[in-house]
Image (cartoon, rainbow, N blue to C red; front, side, top):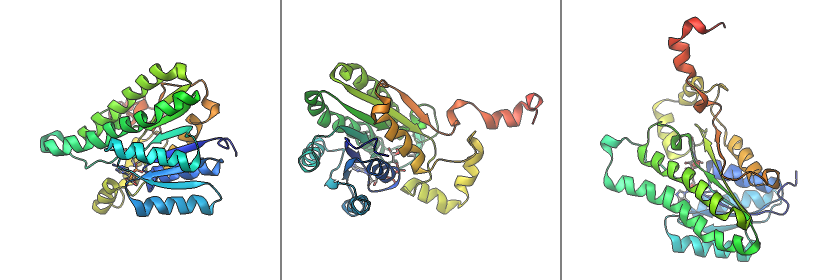
Length: 267
Ligand SMILES: NC(=O)c1ccc[n+]([C@@H]2O[C@H](COP(=O)([O-])OP(=O)(O)OC[C@H]3O[C@@H](n4cnc5c(N)ncnc54)[C@H](O)[C@@H]3O)[C@@H](O)[C@H]2O)c1
């Protein structure tokens, strides 16, 4: 597929997990991809993978929590690959915790990286996109930004990202900029949170599957497919959308219905 033959993308946090899958998907459809990562080793690894597959790719080191480092990295990406037409705000982390155990520092860290970092990236790209007459932005939010699933500081930041998506879509639509968000449920990655949970319980993804109407957790590629669509001209009239990519998790309360509303079930 060459849907992204004219795309030059920046994908933040593309050294691992979902970000790497997004970078590979966009590259497989013809995009040139800048991998913007805090981790130089994994970021360069992704660039090697993309180049081996025949794509144009470039590594830029950045910490999205630092606005100056984001601007420098994005300027370098545009110098190396050409004007950026698609930004995917994927980099994020969670230390996972609850409000009772929350330290002030932990709260600030998660909001700084996840919400403020996303804002820094948008701020760094919008002027150039406006000047060129448009562009697309896809923010990776989470079901945690829609409902309570634990991780309150991460969730507050993700809810902020979904609302920021609406602001960008509304304010810059006339400049030809589209901005959308995807909200994944559980995705089978080896990020630090899942690694710890899997260590405690190797069956964690299988156990989670029963909460999902589609009967499984997501693979990183499930998210990448949605991002590739929203970032492409096929979504040319879609902006301000907040799209759950969650196998139906937020559609209803299946497990509760199975347990309590037995009389209405016919299967
Ligand atoms: N895995 C899931 O179940 C899940 C579910 C919903 C949403 N998400 C979201 O998907 C995105 C990717 O998640 P993942 O599971 O692939 O995570 P991951 O930890 O595997 O990858 C995140 C990447 O971001 C990079 N990163 C972290 N902080 C950064 C910073 N300050 N500056 C630049 N890069 C930074 C990391 O080095 C890493 O390569 C995140 O936005 C996450 O919140 C994940």
